[in-house]
Image 1 (cartoon, helix red, strand yellow):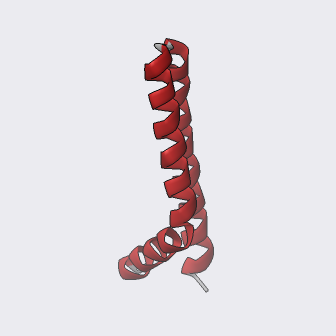
Image 2 (image 1 turned 90 degrees about the vertical axis):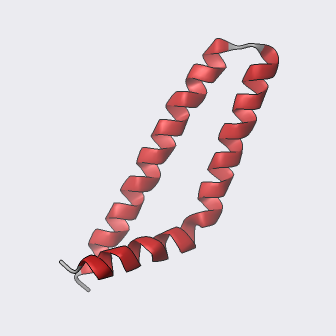
Length: 72
């Protein structure tokens, strides 16, 4: 495995998917602000779980992309 190629593929994937990551961050921020305005603990907890799930989802998608394109 070439670490330079892995780094290149990760950066390429991030460039191709930056819009969806930004949209997800904005959604998380909006949910957090709404939760703080309404003092809703359950919404804050949901937001934390959603944030971790989104991170793991995008990280997994990136690794799948890298593995598929590494040996081409």
